[in-house]
Length: 508
Image 1: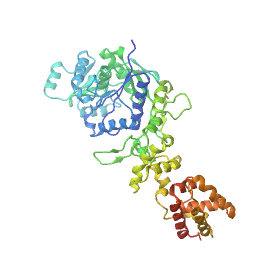
Image 2: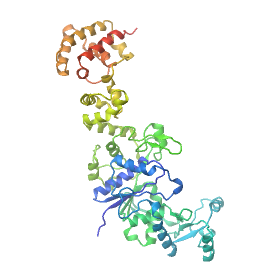
Image 3: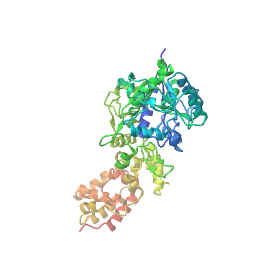
């Protein structure tokens, strides 16, 4: 009988969630939803030395913002809990003992100093079939010596006994069949008595089995550990329920070679974390996609296409679209360059699709920061509709529309030099009289009247209209001129033209 798809995302609370981890979680989510399966959030906090306060809450908040929902986990609960590994000590201890009793693992008492001495003595030293017989462990010590050391409080670890010269096959949905000889593997530490906790290798195998995980979808960097995990499944007698492995391509630097890092983001000016993060030790602040003005839907769409494609040229895909199209057949084996400019493009596209009322709601807090929190909502929505084609982020709206809320006090020098010719003040004074005579100040009604006056007087259309824009906006930019004046109204438009006449001086 085919098992129900169950996947897990298992971050460590050692700091902020990297955007590469977000993509791994996203692919887990898309695969589970595509196949009517379930997704687990499991917290890997077995490395107590690296635990960072606040990191777990950050992880939960990030996925809440992104819209990635878990079926089971530290907050959702579920019948396979607890979902925090530090709360599963008793479970792991049972399986550690099972491996020892079956001869598939052994106890080692080597101190850090002894291990370091071996590294100095033996080039490329690793704890394996060639070296374990010269170390202090339960394979070289008598039962009485082992018991005496443990009873005396000696710290120890439990290591997995890897049999040498055996080909271990890892079946991967992206990479196919990967064969690695066991002789290159070391006897990994599975458990440490110092904190009575397992390491990543044991905890994950036990949890994936007990939680009935069917697919382990993780980053390419974990591929070297896959053969050990295959051996552990066999050692426990769980080979028949071994999950299907999927190792995703790395996210690479936008330029040069290597894996994407926080330093790349700092250097090139883009976030590598979903949310802003404040380091609890140093107080250093790292930018986040949410605080930088990205929409969660845009981030999801952008990340989904880094290493996967739908098999078509489509780029704008909703979460439902992604779920319906997702499969590992269209995943790349090679790394994906992190094109942060493309991320901005996605955000731009999603902002254009947002209706003006929704976007104006996001803009209101920014207006409030500039002292315009009492702006009329309908007017703001109208303004947003005029300028949103020019923005990548909500925060860009202020630069593109501030002249609607604040009359210019200075005028762009390059536009003054080009557009404010001798005699233009007189022309603008004539324009004021024309505008005073217009009863219907809507764009559709005012435009033909003003253009008719320009033509009748024989004025140069571009010169007059650009000078008009300069007085009202402060520079020669912005949406259609008569759409601007319709929002400002007759009196404010005339007031600004008069201020321009009074303050703009022709360039020398």
